[in-house]
Structures are given as C-alpha cells and as structure tokens.
Image 1 (tube, rainbow, N blue to C red):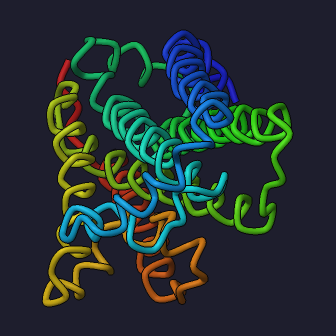
Image 2: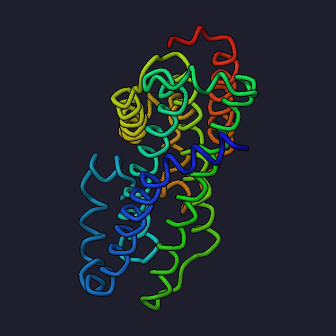
Image 3: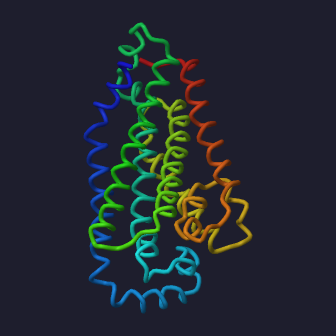
Length: 261
C-alpha cells in the first residue's frame, strides 16, 4: 500500500483545506439559523412562491423555516458543489498527474504492476472522499446539536449518504477520464462538475428533461427529493453504474496506456 499512502500524503494539504472550508461554512450556516429563525418563516413563504427560481432549487418542496429545510438549502449547496469540485479535481489529477509531472517513469520502475498502482490511487481517492464527508457530517450534525435543534436523523444521514455517493460517482468518472490525459485536466474537472450541477437545475425547471435524471447525480442528491421521500432507486443505481464504469475504465486504460516520459 505504498502508493496509497503516498497519494494520501501528497493530497493531505488539499484534503484538509477543502474539508475545513466546506465543513466550516456548513457550521457557520447552521449557527446563523437561530438569529434568523424569527424571519425564516416569512422567507420560506416568499421563496416557495418565486416560480421557476423556487422549482430550480427545490424551494417549493423544502420548508425553509425548519432547521432541516434550512440545512438542505444552505448547507446542501455548499456540500454539493464543494464536495463535487474536490472529487472531480482529485480524481482528474491522480493518473494524468504522473505524466504531467514527469514522475511516471519513476513510478513504473518500482516492482508494482500498472494495475496495482492505479488501484491504490483509486483507493486513495475513495478514502479522501469518505474522509471529507465524515468531517462535513460531523460539522453539520454537531452544529445542529450545538444550537439546540432537533434534526431528522434518518433523513440527515440519508442525505449525507447520497452526497457521498454523488462524489464517489464524479470522482470515478474523472478518474477514468484522467487515464486518457497526459497532464492535469483541472479545467475539464471543474467544467464537468459544473455541467452536472446545472443539468440538475434544468431537470427541475423542465419536466421534458426528466430522462437526464439518470445522467446527473445532482438529481438523486437533491435535498428536496431526499427529505420529501421521493423514490430515487433508479437514478442511484444509474449513478453507481456510471461511477464504477468510469473507475473500471481508468484501471483498464492505464494498464494498457503508452506512458510518455
């Protein structure tokens, strides 16, 4: 597991910064709730009647005046975007970074197969995504307890579970794409995550785009759908398949790739 540990050390600063920023912002949002509690009821009614804007962000389904609705709206967007960007950027750098940084020739002289090297990198990616989500869950849940509110724990854990799955899916897809690149594709990673996010918004606005729910993980990771108990088995299974397909392709491609020095 030498490569696994090396990747964790290499990405440690990035992991800590992303975790601290996302988790810290989530905690700050929750701690703001008591000071806004007197006015969020009126805000909830206002947001629920803003037409397409309300539909795009699920505000017509979430009760913004409750702690769970407030959490899903404010903290959900922070974790949904921040976590996806972290997963995409990290996944996109793991394989392509070896060629872009001219370290591939050093890595491949070690007594490990390409398949093992790629598998350990993929495992490190999954471990970092899991770690970030555990930190964010602790920050969010701890802050809810800290302000004395009662959370719907089943829905909260379900929501964080689909957020973890979404990030693993995006990370797996970017890992597969990185096997085709010869240098870090950070712009491509950011663009992919942003595109999937906006696809989720478009589905909320136009029922004719409902077929895209099997493409973007933001459909099943939407707080409004999770908290309302909407059936999400199909999109979740599709997301798992896409993530595994991306990761599997990355492992297969890297084992056969002509590595440039």
